[in-house]
Image (cartoon, rainbow, N blue to C red; front, top):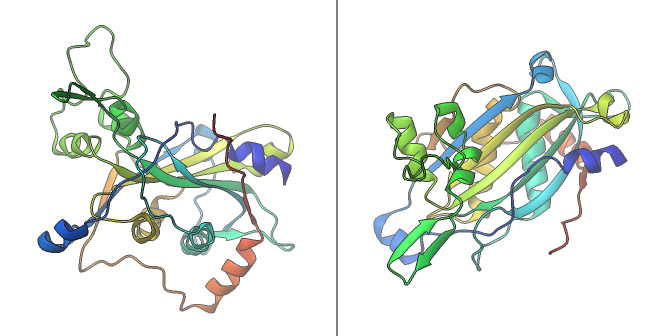
Length: 280
């Protein structure tokens, strides 16, 4: 299990921060917004050679949870979600996609690692009259702006072109607007188990999930985010995929099948919680 610790530490090469807002009185007056989720999956060359998991061709895993992290500007007052609730949700949605916790009869072939938290827009104000966003590229990269051909790194030769000014498609417009807002985020990554046993890190795929947080608290937003993004676990997306949770589509995981109860009970023993990094 030691290999799980260091392999999982590479899940999110981001930075550090805290979160957003619920609707409050204004949300009550104007009505609750729909939860809008954007997800993007990248496969590595090694991952592209693997068969895609499915309920009929399951992939067995052990997992590590890196827990809650702040990846942008820090705001006080965000409600937290119990790590055990996140783990239970992850085990359920993974099972629906064909990822099952390893046991004595089914050894693991992958290590899954996940984390979640906030990625808030970080603004710098000069005399209260001018604001510039310090981490816009970070948000664009996380949401998959590169797959839309958007600039996700500073351009020292064209500093006059703020990120987003060259956008042209509706998808770029939407992603650019979201990159100016506060986000709830999660990331799930898969690593080759046998390679980890040999002290090698071989990533197979990673899925990044985000949703504008305005009008929601993390405990109510994160489980639906995971449900909506789960069909894209381990499946390459050519572009970021937007999913709306409308009145006609209320994402939830219904146990129903007794096997899910067994998966959760079995899965909790297959998931370790990583210690939080020390504050610098």
